[in-house]
Image (cartoon, rainbow, N blue to C red):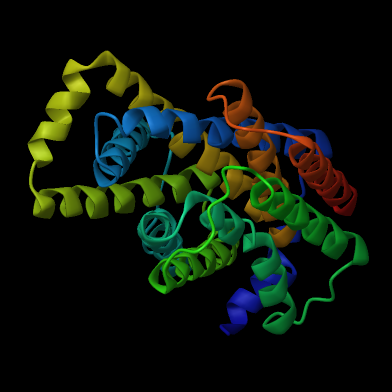
Length: 311
Protein backbone atom coordinates (compact mmCIF):
# COMPACT_ATOMS: atom_id res chain seq x y z
CA UNK A 1 0.00 0.00 0.00
CA UNK A 2 1.29 3.49 -0.86
CA UNK A 3 3.31 4.86 2.08
CA UNK A 4 1.96 8.38 1.72
CA UNK A 5 -1.58 7.05 1.74
CA UNK A 6 -0.83 5.20 4.98
CA UNK A 7 0.53 8.40 6.51
CA UNK A 8 -2.55 10.31 5.43
CA UNK A 9 -4.88 7.81 7.00
CA UNK A 10 -2.98 7.61 10.27
CA UNK A 11 -2.57 11.30 10.87
CA UNK A 12 -3.57 13.60 8.05
CA UNK A 13 -7.31 13.34 8.47
CA UNK A 14 -7.05 14.15 12.19
CA UNK A 15 -5.52 17.56 11.60
CA UNK A 16 -8.80 19.19 10.76
CA UNK A 17 -11.27 17.96 13.36
CA UNK A 18 -14.77 19.34 13.24
CA UNK A 19 -17.23 19.95 16.04
CA UNK A 20 -19.62 17.09 16.72
CA UNK A 21 -22.58 19.38 16.10
CA UNK A 22 -21.26 20.17 12.61
CA UNK A 23 -20.62 16.46 11.92
CA UNK A 24 -24.13 15.56 13.05
CA UNK A 25 -25.57 18.27 10.83
CA UNK A 26 -23.65 17.05 7.79
CA UNK A 27 -24.66 13.44 8.45
CA UNK A 28 -28.33 14.41 8.67
CA UNK A 29 -28.26 16.51 5.48
CA UNK A 30 -26.43 13.82 3.52
CA UNK A 31 -28.63 11.04 4.88
CA UNK A 32 -31.94 12.81 4.26
CA UNK A 33 -31.12 13.70 0.66
CA UNK A 34 -29.54 10.35 -0.22
CA UNK A 35 -32.28 8.48 1.63
CA UNK A 36 -34.96 10.29 -0.39
CA UNK A 37 -33.07 9.79 -3.64
CA UNK A 38 -34.40 6.23 -3.98
CA UNK A 39 -37.97 7.52 -4.26
CA UNK A 40 -36.97 10.20 -6.77
CA UNK A 41 -35.00 7.65 -8.80
CA UNK A 42 -38.00 5.33 -8.90
CA UNK A 43 -40.12 8.10 -10.40
CA UNK A 44 -37.47 9.15 -12.93
CA UNK A 45 -37.14 5.58 -14.22
CA UNK A 46 -40.62 6.01 -15.70
CA UNK A 47 -39.14 8.53 -18.12
CA UNK A 48 -35.44 7.77 -18.47
CA UNK A 49 -32.97 4.91 -18.42
CA UNK A 50 -30.54 4.54 -15.53
CA UNK A 51 -27.50 5.72 -17.47
CA UNK A 52 -29.48 8.69 -18.78
CA UNK A 53 -30.37 9.70 -15.22
CA UNK A 54 -26.72 9.45 -14.19
CA UNK A 55 -25.62 11.48 -17.22
CA UNK A 56 -28.14 14.26 -16.60
CA UNK A 57 -27.48 14.29 -12.86
CA UNK A 58 -23.73 14.69 -13.15
CA UNK A 59 -23.99 17.08 -16.10
CA UNK A 60 -26.10 19.44 -13.99
CA UNK A 61 -23.63 19.13 -11.12
CA UNK A 62 -20.77 19.86 -13.53
CA UNK A 63 -22.48 23.01 -14.80
CA UNK A 64 -22.84 24.26 -11.22
CA UNK A 65 -19.19 23.57 -10.42
CA UNK A 66 -18.03 25.13 -13.70
CA UNK A 67 -19.86 28.32 -12.73
CA UNK A 68 -18.27 28.28 -9.26
CA UNK A 69 -14.81 27.77 -10.77
CA UNK A 70 -15.45 30.55 -13.29
CA UNK A 71 -16.46 32.85 -10.43
CA UNK A 72 -13.27 32.01 -8.57
CA UNK A 73 -15.02 30.29 -5.67
CA UNK A 74 -13.32 26.96 -6.32
CA UNK A 75 -9.73 26.35 -7.41
CA UNK A 76 -8.35 23.03 -8.62
CA UNK A 77 -4.57 22.85 -9.06
CA UNK A 78 -4.03 19.75 -11.20
CA UNK A 79 -0.29 20.03 -10.61
CA UNK A 80 -0.74 19.47 -6.90
CA UNK A 81 1.08 16.65 -5.14
CA UNK A 82 -2.16 14.77 -4.54
CA UNK A 83 -3.66 15.31 -8.00
CA UNK A 84 -3.49 11.58 -8.78
CA UNK A 85 -5.59 10.83 -5.70
CA UNK A 86 -8.04 13.50 -6.83
CA UNK A 87 -8.48 11.65 -10.13
CA UNK A 88 -8.68 8.30 -8.34
CA UNK A 89 -11.45 9.68 -6.13
CA UNK A 90 -13.52 10.67 -9.17
CA UNK A 91 -12.72 7.38 -10.88
CA UNK A 92 -14.03 5.27 -7.99
CA UNK A 93 -17.12 7.43 -7.37
CA UNK A 94 -19.23 8.03 -9.27
CA UNK A 95 -17.66 6.21 -12.23
CA UNK A 96 -16.73 2.67 -11.16
CA UNK A 97 -19.07 2.48 -8.18
CA UNK A 98 -22.19 3.53 -10.10
CA UNK A 99 -21.56 1.13 -12.99
CA UNK A 100 -20.98 -1.83 -10.65
CA UNK A 101 -24.01 -0.91 -8.55
CA UNK A 102 -26.31 -0.58 -11.57
CA UNK A 103 -25.37 -3.95 -13.04
CA UNK A 104 -25.40 -5.52 -9.59
CA UNK A 105 -29.02 -4.43 -9.24
CA UNK A 106 -29.75 -5.72 -12.73
CA UNK A 107 -28.40 -9.22 -12.12
CA UNK A 108 -29.45 -9.72 -8.49
CA UNK A 109 -32.16 -7.96 -6.48
CA UNK A 110 -32.64 -4.71 -4.58
CA UNK A 111 -32.80 -6.66 -1.31
CA UNK A 112 -29.49 -8.43 -1.83
CA UNK A 113 -27.87 -5.28 -3.21
CA UNK A 114 -28.82 -3.24 -0.13
CA UNK A 115 -27.10 -5.80 2.11
CA UNK A 116 -23.94 -5.68 -0.02
CA UNK A 117 -23.79 -1.87 0.12
CA UNK A 118 -24.33 -1.96 3.89
CA UNK A 119 -21.04 -3.88 4.22
CA UNK A 120 -18.95 -0.88 3.05
CA UNK A 121 -18.27 0.35 6.63
CA UNK A 122 -17.24 -3.19 7.62
CA UNK A 123 -14.97 -3.45 4.56
CA UNK A 124 -13.46 -0.04 5.36
CA UNK A 125 -12.70 -1.13 8.91
CA UNK A 126 -11.13 -4.37 7.65
CA UNK A 127 -8.93 -2.50 5.15
CA UNK A 128 -7.79 -0.06 7.84
CA UNK A 129 -6.78 -3.00 10.05
CA UNK A 130 -5.06 -5.11 7.37
CA UNK A 131 -3.28 -2.41 5.35
CA UNK A 132 -2.96 0.55 7.72
CA UNK A 133 -2.42 -1.48 10.90
CA UNK A 134 -5.01 0.60 12.70
CA UNK A 135 -6.10 -0.75 16.07
CA UNK A 136 -9.89 -0.55 16.06
CA UNK A 137 -11.78 0.65 19.12
CA UNK A 138 -14.32 -1.73 20.59
CA UNK A 139 -17.05 0.88 20.41
CA UNK A 140 -16.37 1.55 16.73
CA UNK A 141 -16.37 -2.14 15.79
CA UNK A 142 -19.57 -2.80 17.76
CA UNK A 143 -21.34 0.18 16.18
CA UNK A 144 -20.50 -0.97 12.65
CA UNK A 145 -21.53 -4.59 13.25
CA UNK A 146 -24.75 -3.55 15.02
CA UNK A 147 -25.75 -1.15 12.25
CA UNK A 148 -25.03 -3.81 9.60
CA UNK A 149 -27.03 -6.42 11.53
CA UNK A 150 -29.93 -3.98 11.67
CA UNK A 151 -29.85 -3.59 7.88
CA UNK A 152 -29.86 -7.37 7.46
CA UNK A 153 -32.82 -7.82 9.81
CA UNK A 154 -34.80 -5.02 8.15
CA UNK A 155 -34.13 -6.42 4.70
CA UNK A 156 -34.13 -10.21 5.06
CA UNK A 157 -37.30 -10.45 7.15
CA UNK A 158 -39.25 -8.11 4.90
CA UNK A 159 -42.07 -9.72 2.84
CA UNK A 160 -40.55 -7.96 -0.16
CA UNK A 161 -37.18 -9.67 0.30
CA UNK A 162 -35.99 -11.49 -2.81
CA UNK A 163 -33.08 -13.86 -2.42
CA UNK A 164 -31.34 -15.82 -5.08
CA UNK A 165 -29.94 -13.77 -7.88
CA UNK A 166 -27.14 -14.64 -10.23
CA UNK A 167 -23.48 -15.05 -9.39
CA UNK A 168 -22.71 -12.27 -11.86
CA UNK A 169 -24.86 -9.89 -9.80
CA UNK A 170 -22.94 -10.79 -6.64
CA UNK A 171 -19.66 -10.14 -8.42
CA UNK A 172 -20.82 -6.71 -9.57
CA UNK A 173 -22.03 -5.80 -6.07
CA UNK A 174 -18.70 -6.96 -4.63
CA UNK A 175 -17.02 -4.58 -7.06
CA UNK A 176 -19.32 -1.79 -5.88
CA UNK A 177 -18.37 -2.48 -2.26
CA UNK A 178 -14.67 -2.42 -3.12
CA UNK A 179 -15.06 0.86 -5.05
CA UNK A 180 -17.05 2.42 -2.22
CA UNK A 181 -14.41 1.32 0.27
CA UNK A 182 -11.32 2.65 -1.52
CA UNK A 183 -13.20 5.84 -2.40
CA UNK A 184 -13.12 6.81 1.27
CA UNK A 185 -9.34 6.46 1.46
CA UNK A 186 -8.74 8.31 -1.82
CA UNK A 187 -11.04 11.14 -0.75
CA UNK A 188 -9.30 11.38 2.62
CA UNK A 189 -5.90 11.58 0.92
CA UNK A 190 -7.14 14.19 -1.57
CA UNK A 191 -8.47 16.22 1.35
CA UNK A 192 -4.91 16.94 2.49
CA UNK A 193 -4.54 19.39 -0.38
CA UNK A 194 -7.99 19.96 -1.91
CA UNK A 195 -11.16 21.36 -0.43
CA UNK A 196 -14.24 19.07 -0.34
CA UNK A 197 -15.93 21.22 -3.01
CA UNK A 198 -12.92 20.83 -5.33
CA UNK A 199 -12.95 17.06 -4.83
CA UNK A 200 -16.68 16.93 -5.58
CA UNK A 201 -16.17 19.10 -8.66
CA UNK A 202 -13.65 16.63 -10.08
CA UNK A 203 -16.05 13.77 -9.33
CA UNK A 204 -18.79 15.62 -11.23
CA UNK A 205 -16.65 16.30 -14.30
CA UNK A 206 -15.48 12.70 -14.53
CA UNK A 207 -19.00 11.38 -14.01
CA UNK A 208 -20.36 13.71 -16.68
CA UNK A 209 -17.79 12.57 -19.24
CA UNK A 210 -18.25 8.85 -18.55
CA UNK A 211 -22.05 8.67 -18.41
CA UNK A 212 -22.64 11.01 -21.36
CA UNK A 213 -20.16 8.93 -23.32
CA UNK A 214 -22.05 5.73 -22.48
CA UNK A 215 -25.37 7.30 -23.47
CA UNK A 216 -23.85 8.55 -26.71
CA UNK A 217 -22.67 5.04 -27.58
CA UNK A 218 -26.05 3.55 -26.68
CA UNK A 219 -27.90 6.04 -28.90
CA UNK A 220 -30.70 8.43 -28.04
CA UNK A 221 -28.27 10.80 -26.32
CA UNK A 222 -30.04 13.95 -27.50
CA UNK A 223 -33.49 12.60 -26.62
CA UNK A 224 -32.71 12.51 -22.89
CA UNK A 225 -31.99 16.25 -22.96
CA UNK A 226 -35.22 16.86 -24.86
CA UNK A 227 -37.05 14.92 -22.14
CA UNK A 228 -35.26 16.94 -19.46
CA UNK A 229 -36.24 20.30 -20.96
CA UNK A 230 -39.82 19.38 -21.90
CA UNK A 231 -41.06 17.55 -18.78
CA UNK A 232 -41.04 19.50 -15.53
CA UNK A 233 -41.25 16.28 -13.47
CA UNK A 234 -38.01 15.05 -15.02
CA UNK A 235 -36.34 18.44 -14.60
CA UNK A 236 -37.39 18.61 -10.94
CA UNK A 237 -36.14 15.08 -10.25
CA UNK A 238 -32.80 15.66 -11.95
CA UNK A 239 -32.44 18.99 -10.13
CA UNK A 240 -32.90 17.18 -6.81
CA UNK A 241 -30.35 14.50 -7.70
CA UNK A 242 -27.89 16.92 -9.29
CA UNK A 243 -28.00 19.74 -6.73
CA UNK A 244 -28.93 18.00 -3.48
CA UNK A 245 -27.54 14.49 -3.95
CA UNK A 246 -24.44 15.23 -6.06
CA UNK A 247 -23.27 18.74 -5.17
CA UNK A 248 -24.40 19.13 -1.56
CA UNK A 249 -24.26 15.50 -0.39
CA UNK A 250 -20.90 14.57 -1.87
CA UNK A 251 -19.32 17.83 -0.73
CA UNK A 252 -20.59 17.14 2.78
CA UNK A 253 -19.56 13.48 2.66
CA UNK A 254 -16.08 14.35 1.41
CA UNK A 255 -15.81 16.80 4.32
CA UNK A 256 -16.70 13.99 6.75
CA UNK A 257 -14.17 11.64 5.14
CA UNK A 258 -11.45 14.25 5.45
CA UNK A 259 -12.05 14.94 9.14
CA UNK A 260 -13.45 11.76 10.75
CA UNK A 261 -12.29 8.17 10.92
CA UNK A 262 -13.28 6.77 7.53
CA UNK A 263 -15.08 3.68 8.84
CA UNK A 264 -17.08 5.77 11.34
CA UNK A 265 -18.01 8.34 8.67
CA UNK A 266 -19.18 5.53 6.38
CA UNK A 267 -21.14 3.88 9.18
CA UNK A 268 -22.90 7.06 10.26
CA UNK A 269 -24.05 7.98 6.78
CA UNK A 270 -24.92 4.51 5.44
CA UNK A 271 -26.88 3.60 8.58
CA UNK A 272 -28.83 6.86 8.55
CA UNK A 273 -29.53 6.48 4.83
CA UNK A 274 -30.95 3.03 5.53
CA UNK A 275 -33.18 4.38 8.28
CA UNK A 276 -34.50 7.27 6.20
CA UNK A 277 -34.86 5.12 3.09
CA UNK A 278 -36.93 2.50 4.93
CA UNK A 279 -39.13 5.10 6.67
CA UNK A 280 -39.66 6.99 3.42
CA UNK A 281 -40.45 3.77 1.57
CA UNK A 282 -43.07 2.78 4.14
CA UNK A 283 -44.70 6.20 4.46
CA UNK A 284 -44.48 7.42 0.85
CA UNK A 285 -44.38 4.29 -1.31
CA UNK A 286 -46.42 2.06 0.99
CA UNK A 287 -43.69 -0.57 1.31
CA UNK A 288 -44.54 -3.47 3.68
CA UNK A 289 -43.39 -3.17 7.29
CA UNK A 290 -43.76 -5.10 10.52
CA UNK A 291 -42.07 -5.96 13.78
CA UNK A 292 -38.89 -6.87 11.86
CA UNK A 293 -38.76 -3.28 10.61
CA UNK A 294 -38.94 -1.89 14.15
CA UNK A 295 -36.30 -4.32 15.43
CA UNK A 296 -33.96 -3.75 12.48
CA UNK A 297 -34.24 0.03 12.63
CA UNK A 298 -33.72 -0.02 16.39
CA UNK A 299 -30.49 -1.96 15.91
CA UNK A 300 -29.36 0.43 13.18
CA UNK A 301 -30.17 3.50 15.27
CA UNK A 302 -28.22 1.95 18.15
CA UNK A 303 -25.28 1.46 15.79
CA UNK A 304 -25.45 5.12 14.74
CA UNK A 305 -25.56 6.20 18.39
CA UNK A 306 -22.50 4.10 19.23
CA UNK A 307 -20.70 5.52 16.19
CA UNK A 308 -21.35 9.03 17.48
CA UNK A 309 -19.73 8.02 20.76
CA UNK A 310 -16.65 6.88 18.84
CA UNK A 311 -16.09 10.26 17.21
